[in-house]
Image (cartoon, rainbow, N blue to C red; front, side):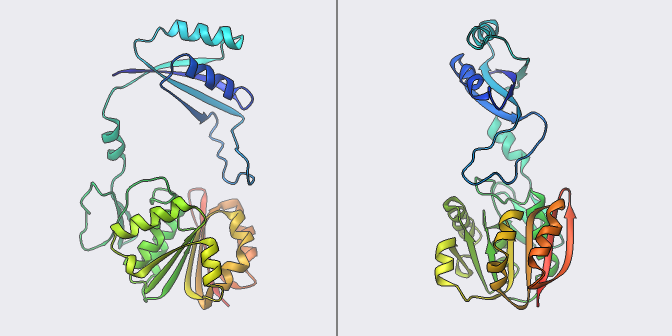
Length: 294
């Protein structure tokens, strides 16, 4: 089946009404997109943020009477917003989506491989991981920065805390690189489920335990490990600095990511009373901060 995309220019105030009108006019789906590449990284708690200017795209069957759709929107909204029309190629979208995800290498030893690909180097540290709903498949610079650090620096078997584990990718990588035990922690139940599934897929459950944040706090108040990984966001990293620092053993390492370059100084300052900051490494707009416990 072929499709036609009708894209309307919208704002925060009228997006809901226009989205409803697209649906009422027969759109099979309606998607929202930022009009100016203005990402929202840390919304206030409990809020549902939306960009100031948006593009609303309704997907219609190719034989739709598009003039009738436009007239419907105009008559119910009072005017016709600026719009564009584009045909959408009919193809196997599942196959196209799968083709977008290929094995990726991080440093010398670590590869992330979707399940439908054969690992390019069977002797490497191959993490079998499919894109999913939990954050962390290696495609984002924050994850890439952490995987590169593990590849370059993980030599001696130690216990590891992966705080904010997402898909479990960092804990699984540490495990496959030789960690003795990994404690994977997250607030999101979906992340815990994804970590469980990915740990099973990579055969590391024997050395990887998964905990919600409340359970981890209850059971491991005094736990200290030689390495703690935290790929979350700058705000939570600052707020949790004392707690995260308490779980790093003396002379141990902390690896922080999820930080925009302009946030690096603030995060570094939050940790300097417990750590010597060894390096701040940037990839695109994101940084990784590594420190050694005093």
